[in-house]
Length: 238
Image (cartoon, rainbow, N blue to C red; front, side, top):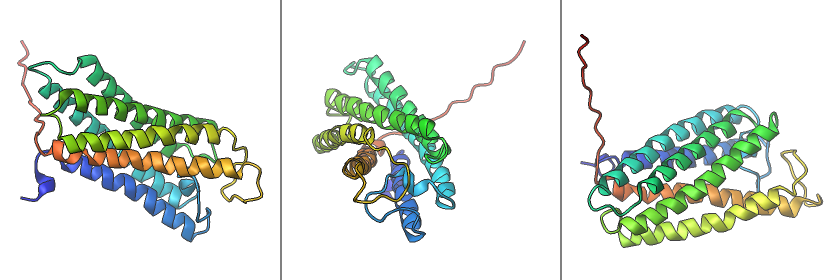
């Protein structure tokens, strides 16, 4: 039996592969077509023009669906571990679930509304994705600490703490510096007044995005330990 067939470990694995592939594939295509600069494009810039916009939209929606499944499975796993004795407050686990779902919804908005066409909606979806995502991994790190040892290993918890700190530190420059970027064209020039803010925001955006990916990578060992079954009951009508 392959390790990724144990339990539900294929869920976070598929999420990590699909998400990272979305960013990398669209970046390579957009650079090859010279739609964006080689250095420091926003993630959304790499999916602004066809055909990469089509690939970006499709793969992002697939990643969002994988994210929803993974986040829900994590919620049920913590719920099961928390049955006896109760270590994690139920509302904490529920809050993490909904924040994760909101983050996935933000991904779908980003994929559907290109920044060059509907900028305000696209930016709102991006803010929803990043803000909810950061709070989600903070809550999951807290849950890992409270529920330890059955919920995760000590090394896994330490990895989640490091990833969470990196995501938090990179999140604020992403948002703050982006507010100073006034130009919307895909190609930037060093002579532009807002170029330093663009570079700082774009670099931090990539860091936050891949922080999410590496955080879900820490779910692999946990997801090998459980499965979820769907029970169907027939209710006879009278």
